[in-house]
Length: 267
Picture (cartoon, rainbow, N blue to C red):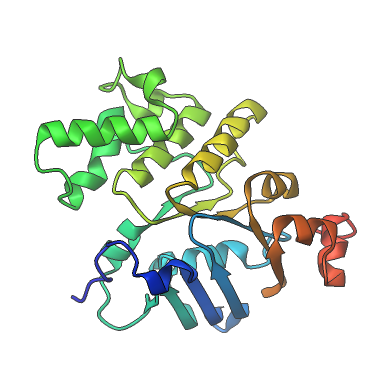
């Protein structure tokens, strides 16, 4: 199978280009259309928030970015989505390699029923990233450190990941996602099941991670979008209504529907 282009340093021409783009992106579940003609650029080393009422299409769009919709029966995706200029829906593309480059963290923490160590080591083993036990140990430590979890778990790496608190489990899942050194991390309401203290830790982590990763986050919390993102896209009834710099969108939206949503008139 043809793989996505090797994960090398981008050429000078790409450095000022979006990391990912969507053009005329539409999604159907059977005969029902869930997304219509979405055009969106996702900037490199930025956090892009997707906001909007429940059922508006934001999670559907997020799943398009690493082809998670492929696993849903009857789902059809149209239009073009690119990663570093390569169409990720082209025939023959290696979806496993794509998902190594575009990782995902889900709404509810979902650690594997394995040890903390093996949760992190799973991806590097699968993709043949580590050539030795020492190299694998280093990846596990670095990933847990990047996720702000190493100091909390370094003395119990053989304990089950499912034994951690909810917030720790979600950081474990983030560590698991970054262990294969992706370029993009997708987060689907990663804090919705967490308490305020755990949520604050995840938000701090997102801000740190954007130095090395491009992040797209679906959030039901406009306050969270305002805190963590540089760009925000507002979806409504399957349409991308408005996208812009986060501060501009929240303080001076151009569309009346955006204004109505952020002021609580609907949603």
